[in-house]
Length: 120
Image (tube, helix red, strand yellow):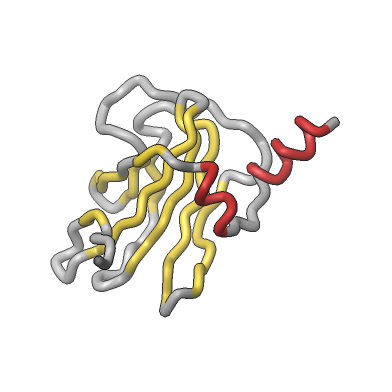
């Protein structure tokens, strides 16, 4: 029973700071044409879950999520057509090959993705 509750919380669309502690591995994303792809290019990794948010003035705005059903998506099905705003900050939590990843990134003025630099 406890396992079912934990899985339900992890896979819920409502993310919190506690979720960020669970997703401790550093992930990666890349663009492919007008799509955002999760993981590495061309790898045979299975995407099981994803949650993408835009971070605006410290407030998280949900953009995409896979819901509470475990997936098994491979490249290029792990790419999602979405318009990322230049100058904006984003965060993604995802499960790939049953490993929990997180990645925060900025979209530069020219539209390229760069890992968010932590403030010192």
